[in-house]
Amino acid sequence: MEAETEVKLSLYERLGGEAAVDAAVDIFYRKVLMDDRISEYFDGIDMDAQAKKQKAFLTMVFGGPANYNGKDLRTAHAGMKGLSDIHVDAVVENLGATLKELGVPDSDIAEVAAIAESVRDDVLNR
Image 1 (cartoon, rainbow, N blue to C red):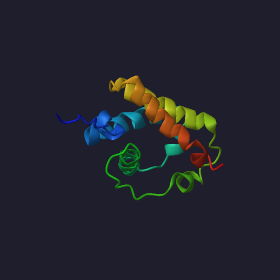
Image 2 (image 1 turned 90 degrees about the vertical axis):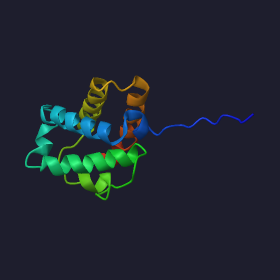
Image 3 (image 1 turned 90 degrees about the horizontal axis):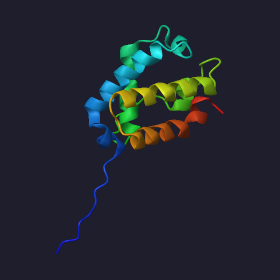
Image 4 (image 1 turned 60 degrees about the vertical axis):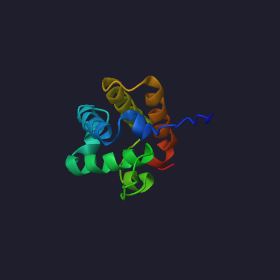
């Protein structure tokens, strides 16, 4: 009798792959642009290009295809004046709310939040 091997799906696969990441990023940025805590950081930003970069970045960090070729988080956020924990908290909250809206299980939302927390110091350049 063959031993069963359990295949652990990546977070990217559990979320639903490319279509799910695309939908999540689109909803996420609608929330971000309506959030007074962080919306000003996106004034004058090409949001189509931003969303495309974010989709590639999240796909990579969630365990999907690594097609992100943008700046590292520390470099990308270096010029953002006044960026603080309040702003990172707002991003994490909006991302969590987006995933909840999409019916993502709490355990996967917690994993996404942990990934976001793991890069907090890079985003805040500390």
